Image (cartoon, rainbow, N blue to C red; front, side, top):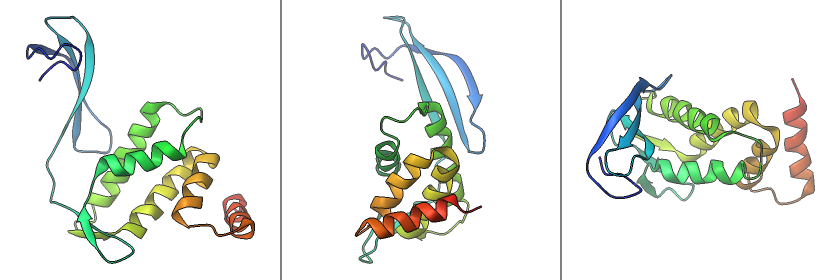
Length: 150
């Protein structure tokens, strides 16, 4: 594993532990050359998953794309990055556990919203406003009312 700081190839694993609810392992590594530490995640390779977009086009599932949307929703919110990573792993676990080779983007959006609802109300509303394409204030208020219901 190359060090992200100095690009040396000699790093050693300092700590290794499984990540809850997923098939991945979190490894803390230390560079032999510069001494800096960094974290890597080792994941079990799964069946390739295609996402069916709203226009019926299909594209390969991309964790980075999902993460970017979630991070935008959580921007300037007091949410530790560790909680976001745990939520991402949980969302992926839910998506990949369906054992389908294709999943509609709408289903992924619903799963993300379910998780964001439990994490942070503002992040949930931000994500919902883009995902549900709010056209005006009344649709925004309708979504807020749904959130407030038990």
